[in-house]
Every structure is written in structure tokens, then in C-alpha cells.
Amino acid sequence: MLRSFCLALSFLVMADSFAQQPASSPALIPMPAQMKTGTGTFTLKNNLPVHLPKSAADLAFIREHITGKLKQAGINANFSAAKENAGIKLALNSAADKTIGKEGYRLVVNEQGISLTANEAAGLFYGLQTLWQLMPAEIESKETLSGVKWTVPYVNITDQPRFAWRGLMLDVVRHFFTKQQVKDFIDNMVKYKYNMLHLHLTDDQGWRIEIKSLPRLTEFGAFRAERTGRWGEFKKQDPEEQKSYGGFYTQDDIRELLAYAKQRFVTIMPEIDVPGHSMALLAAYPELSCTRGTYQVNVGDRFMIWPGNGTFYGTIDNNVCPANEKTYEVLDKVFTEIASLFPFEYIHMGGDEAYKGFWEKSDAVKELMKKENLKDQHEVQSYFVKRVAKIIESKGKKMMGWDEIMEGGLAPGAAVMSWQGEKGGIAAAKLKHPVVMSPNTFSYVDLYQGDPLAEPPTYGRVLLKQSYQFNPLPAGVDSQYILGGQANLWSERLHTVRHMEYMLWPRGWAIAESVWSPSAAKNWPDFIKRTEAHFTRSELAGTNYSRSMYDPAVSVKKVQDSTIQVTLTTQLDDLDVYYSFDEFYPDNYYPVYKNPLLFPAGASSLKVVTYRKGKQVGKPINLPLTELLKRAK
Image (cartoon, rainbow, N blue to C red):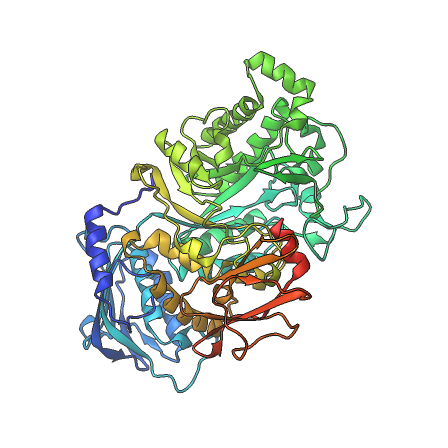
């Protein structure tokens, strides 16, 4: 079982090492467990001697990785040099160093060169990611840049991850990302020492993986009509409409992705989401629904309604039927092929957001309840989940699901991924079940990261500062049951890679530090300085990111019959917010915000922008009175 392995004593030592760092400390994300900086730099020159052990088979990619990265700097890596003459020396410990574990490393840069040691190849790989971050930002450029002095500051780093599960979930269903785009996603995540890619492969909007024994799944479930505009407001698909949007991964594609990820020390976990979120499955096999009808892949039109207070209902039954034996026959075939493809010990079966209103009307479900002595629909879902767990276990795998799988009773041995806040994960850990923490309150990186009037449309809000406050180990929970933490990137509204990257970074950096670095050593102002350095690196790499951390958060309340009061707050302490009510966008010659603002009579909008030390850093934001009045209600 993957386990958290930081001890309280090491927290104290590591926190002290952070405190020793000067203001000019290297901008590393995530921050190492221990780091001491020196006063000099080591210069890398062409035909750089590099020593790499030849005996380890899994070091072949590391050699390729070093060669490619140094080539970006216009430096040729010479691996034929003797160890004592090497400018970069990599070594695997002959006897395990217990202080750094399986994924840790020691990195020393001094006048003699660069020395990187680890117990296993993964540690060398993560140490290299730190080394690249120590180098000038131009190392990230896809083009070789002239005039760069390739130096590395003197440091002494001892590092290891706080958690063994450091995950990102990518939803490839709502909007499809190609095999190459997934590879690019892996390349970006490993820069920040993520090691788990959770692929959400099936949902109402598509079935994204080939199941050879059930070809209808991709024939009828992988494509839908194309839509442009706002998710949830799309026109419903006409059955005769051309289905030109979508795609799926063949089993050979999956094998290629698995091999690509393995080279980079990333594990891929598949998710097949049942019993809910199954419209694409039902488009192929409508007889698996408790509610007879014609089913097709959803195009993004609204059929699930969320009145508030965490309640929801569906206008279409998108569940597979727990009372239909054919459901389990189909799922047995699906999980047989999934298990044979994916080496990882866990298979994620979803289990979330299953609207049970249609089950309540089903004669077959009523008969099942009577036969199995099930008292309510939660126990019906638990019955389904436990049967799926047995199917998955019969394939030699373990089952994981979203925290709804706890409703009605948790299946023996099941692992829980806690998304509805932390409560589900805490409860599962107390029941001694493995838990991955991915609460929507911290780690849902598809949500607003600034004011909704200045951001792409979505639902809910998680600011960068909230993501940085994420702690996968809640107080009072036994750490042995917390596998780690994860950020989730749902793609309902992410039409492109550029949009996906905008939502993920920099919040993905905050989560990376939350699952790797010691919690006692986290420092928000310092993280912001390092984030700004990584903005530059991202620009050179051609990776998109969001600067919404500079924008003010807006809260509104009604103070008189028709007057509203607007309060502006910033995530960073050194920002000034300038505002105007006169229909012209303000600059730093306009009034600076100091106290809550009363909307003056006759004004139709409030416009704001943030500056730091006389330089604009935030985007100009227009806040119409009509929209603010809605919030005041």
C-alpha cells in the first residue's frame, strides 16, 4: 500500500532548513525538504562530461532525458568521460539511504561540479527536475537561445516526497485530448514531481477506450455532434445530426501511453464511471438502463439539475441498472480488458452523482430491494458498488471510487477518493480504508480562480491561495490510510489545451507543493515569488498559465433599499486596487481602494485593476451593477 512517510521530527528539521534560505534562494517548485545555498555557481560548458551508471536498465531514458534537456541549452552531453572528470555525476546508492526513501535524492552543486545520488532511478529523475529548475529559465525554451550563461548555483539539497500518491486527474471525455496531448500533459506534470495520472475515460459525453469484446462502446459512444459556446446551454443533439466530435484510444494507444508514462515514473490509473455518468455506455447498450428509451451521447446540453444545497436530479436516466444481470456481464467484459491493459493495482469505478429517482420508479429495482433486503436507494447503490468491487477483485485488482461509494455501506477493501470536501476521506480513513484526498474545496482546478466576470465560465471558485492551503492529511487522521493527494481537472468547459493549461497552472504548482513538500515549511509569500519565476519559465516553454492571482476578489451586500456595498480583497498583500465608477477603465492615477465602496446613484458599473509598485499586474475588470445586484440577493 502507498503510504505517507513524513515524521513529525523530520517536519521540524525541514522547516528549520527552509527558514535558513536567503531571499535569493532558488525558485524551486515544489520546494525541497532540505536545502542549503552557497555563494558561487558552476558553469556548464559544451561537450559536458556526464557520468551515469551503465548497469541499471531503467536508466536508459534518464540518459535520453539528460541529452535532450542539455541540447536545449546547446550543450552536448559526453557520457564517455571517466567518473572523476564528469561535470555531472549520477549514482545509485549501493546501500539504501533510508533518509530519502524510494523517490528521494541528494543533489550537491559546488566548484567540483554537480553530484546527484538516489536509491532508485525515480529519485535520480526527480533530482534532475530540480536541477533543470536551478538552471536559467531559458532551459525550458523549445529553441536554443544564444547569449545565455548556463550556470547552476551552489546548493546542497536532500529531498523526498511527503506522499507517495501525487496525482492529477485529466478528464478526456467531456472534451477529447489526443494521445500526443496526453503525452505533453505527462511531460508538464513530471516537471513538478507528480507521479500519478488519473484518466477519466468514460462519462455521459463519451466512451474513450477501446473494449474489443464490446465494439459498440466506441462505435456508438465515442463521437457526438460538435457544439460551440457555453456548456450546459448547448442545443440537444438530433439523432440524425452528424457526429463529428470525439475520439477514443485504441488498446495500442493505451499501451503506448503507459510505456511513455512509465519512462517518466508516472503511473496511470483508469476510471470507468458507473453507475451514473453512463449515457455513452447506454447509447451503445440501452437495454442496460432501468428506464427504457432511446439513448445517445450527451453533447453538453443540460439534463442534470442542481437546485442548490448539494441536491440534484436528472431529467434523463443516465444510470446503468443495478437490477439487470446484463449490466454486470457487460462490466465484467469491460474490467477484464481494463485490468489486462493497466498494470496499476487500482481501477477507479467512479460511483459519483448517481441520481436515484428513476430507480425508485423501477419495478426491477423494487424487486431487487425485496430480494436482497435493501431498505433504501443508498443500499441499492451499495449493492451495485460491492458487485463491481467483486468483479474488479476477480481481475486481480483493487477498487477505488469517489466518496459516494460509502453511501449504504462501503465495500470491503475499497479505496475512497474524497472529492466532496474532506469529510468522506476522514470517515473512510477512520474505517481503515485507503484514501486519496482530492477535495473540491482545494484541488478542483477547473473552477473559477478569480472573479467570474473576468474568467472563463465555470461553476464554484477555488483561488490559488486556497489550493496552496491544501493539506492531504487532515488533523486527527491516521497517516497510514492517506495515500496522498490529487488535483482534478474536469473538462466540461475546457475546449482546448490552452484553456486546460490556463486552469491548471499555477494552481497545479500549489497542489504539487502540498503533496511533495513538508507542510510545516509552506510559505505563501515565498511561493508567490517562486510562482512568478515559473511564469517566465512557462512562457519560454510555450505553456499557458493564469495570472488571476493578481485580480481582486469581489464580495457584495445590500446595505439600503437599492444601494450595494462592494468589498475588494486581494490574495497578495503588496497590491493596490484602483477603481472607477465613470465608465472609463482606471489606472494608477485613479482612486486607490481602501474601504468598502458604496455604489453611487447613477453609476452603472464599477471598474477595477490592480497594480504593484506602480506597474499594472492585474487585468482590467468590469463589474456591471446588474450583475452585482444579482450577487447581493
